[in-house]
Length: 118
Image (tube, rainbow, N blue to C red; front, side, top):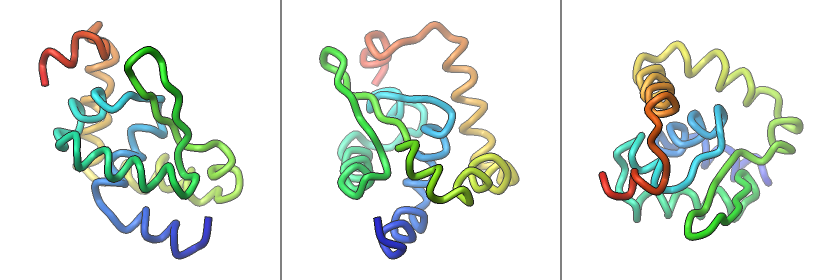
């Protein structure tokens, strides 16, 4: 991944929102859609872009595709860890989404029943 590609990823608020959640845990598209209230097509566009340059890893489980941040990216660029653990946590907007993730984690919802809510 080039510096230009990384800066392009980090320059978009929606991509930062996605990465902020994926830094905490692996999530599927429907979970991200639910948590971020981003349309599925817009979300897929961002995920595809980040996946194509190697920022994200994905795996398929049944009909769901789960995404996570590529661990080698975090090792190669440790400033990203600081970004997700410190800098973004100073912004109320990102903190609210992390609280929503915590609520989701404790709710018992899964991809299977979340799709009915969307």
